[in-house]
Length: 453
Image (cartoon, one colour):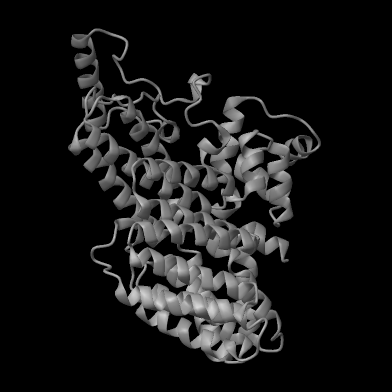
């Protein structure tokens, strides 16, 4: 690794999403934070420049000196670009100096509040008051939003609408752009369970909360927080079953399977996909069955079971042809023709490691899925481009492999998804098999830079 080159770059958000780093940040273990940064090529000099500390201070911290002062912790977080909440700083009630200062008149009666605020507004409006820019990075003291004593369909509609909007942000920009929003929204939505309502509204609310937990779990998975992902998805499954929504329960099981598939526990993933099929069949949702069968095929491919992989893929196509995507629930409507093609491509790609001849079919299917992708599902397109470029390089279709690989790497840097960074590993390995081609070497260098940060 070129340490100097890496250290001159802005520290990528993906660094802070890694489980080991998140654990160190949560414990405010600054020594470990600095050590982990050094391991990816960020020098002590660079850390010192970002945090406003001397190199001797950095050395002392790395040698065991604890950082306890709130203002120092806040300066370190802000300098490195760490979200303050990751260090428990954003809403720390014990650290009042780190909260934005109260507005003039906050501690007076209503008449005096109005007078002082008007005077402050006038000063700001005419430029007589000089703003302290540092205050703007501090959070305003947190106060929970009151919830209604009684709720109806309107409140549940609002919960569902927010989930829908955040889901589309996740599709396009990655889980890192909206995870904190969905988790914060959940803290308010769950308090609605304490309100009085009709039995019908209560069931709708449980379903809406299940969907929010489903999205919270998925976005947590996307940024590498696998433990939190499993907790949210388990809650989603419980509330979906309580609400009697077998389709949503199946979707939660699908997402659990994808978590385990990503970390290489293929047999566990397969069991979740098969459990999901039972729920999807109970819901008579052909599109969900198709999605689960397609992922089951991918898992069988990774296990090298060609017969069962192709059988599951055949069933996925049949169920998809019989499905009604327009009438399907919101949480599964994303699974379209491009996703079916992509799953087929991933299945053949997995089988190619066990049986010759499947790689050409994988490249053909993945090319088809990429062609069908629009601008809505950017992250899905990234995954498909990575897999396609990998297959093309392995087939020695260097020109197309480099073009698709470079497009994938560019898109990875534009969205907030640790998962896409993780999935670059096989493409990097394929590039390393062609060390004499300068364009392939440059692609490999770009991937190494992204994965290092």
